Image 1: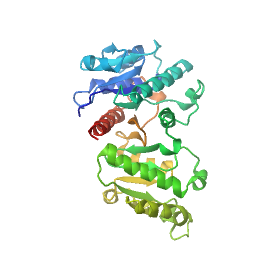
Image 2: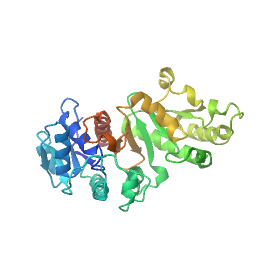
Image 3: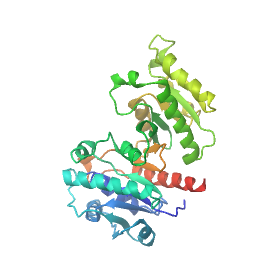
Image 4: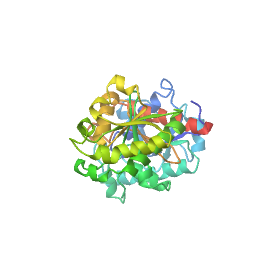
Amino acid sequence: MTLALPLAYSIGDPAGIGPEMAAAAWAVRHTESLPPFFVIGSARVIEEAARRRGLDVPVCAVKAPDEVADCFADALPVLDLADLDYTPGEPDDAGASLALTALGVATGLVRSGAAAALVTGPIAKSRLARVGFDFPGQTEFVADACGIAPENAVMMLAGPSLRVVPITVHVALRDVPELLTIELIRNRAAITAAALVRDFGIVRPRLAVAGLNPHAGEDGRMGSEEAEIVAPAVVLLQAAGIAVSGPLPPDTMFHAEARERYDVAICMYHDQALIPLKALDFDQGVNVTLGLPIIRTSPDHGTAFGIAGTDTARVGPTIAALRMAGECAARRTLV
């Protein structure tokens, strides 16, 4: 892919695996054909994280994204915000502050048109809350920065085998039935369909909508949500010209033959979506936010404090997140 602008990678919590994943991705930039990217965070942290992983990753300090092209081939560009000590696996408030500042700077650079897309390193939400972060996650932070209402920012998890969208996300399972509405399903599915056209180049995306209950309710014997909420939403989507089917029994949606019939599975709750995605594409899963005026992706994993600095974290999801961000950004430039 060819991009006129680099990707912006916010470092995430410096005590997690985000810094070493950025270094490891740069180390394989040629073999993986990655687009140019730069890290917003700490040059010192990146250098030490690379050293602990046994990587020869020179770092070049940049003051702006337009300097990235001159050094990316020979060094990992870093917009240096703080000279922190690198202590993997030991998060603290200083690191959380850096993660929050880096996220804000990176988002601003992409919004201003100085960078092509945003890739966010993993954060620890509980740590960020201690330094003033009052959002459920980075998705909501980025949406707010872009002036997008939370309900219009849709989380999609994507891998080589499967794409899934959970209608409800980080909520208790017992709260899901009360949160589901016809309009919520219709709105998020419609945003998903539009994004698959715009950012993924799928001319007529096919959506498969899961039921909430076992066997999709089995004609009301196991719940009424399919008849009262899910099916009416599907009818509205079909009336809008979207290729959509459902509600479908969730337990038969994810085998190989079934997956050939759709481009994305619309699921009712977090684990209904993420369990099959992680079972199929654990090392290549990407979290991408749909419905934003900018491209934002993230590796589909957390900070992994327990293995940070041990050279055991796999770089696949970060490579996939960078590649997907670049591909989506390239498609938008063609529109």
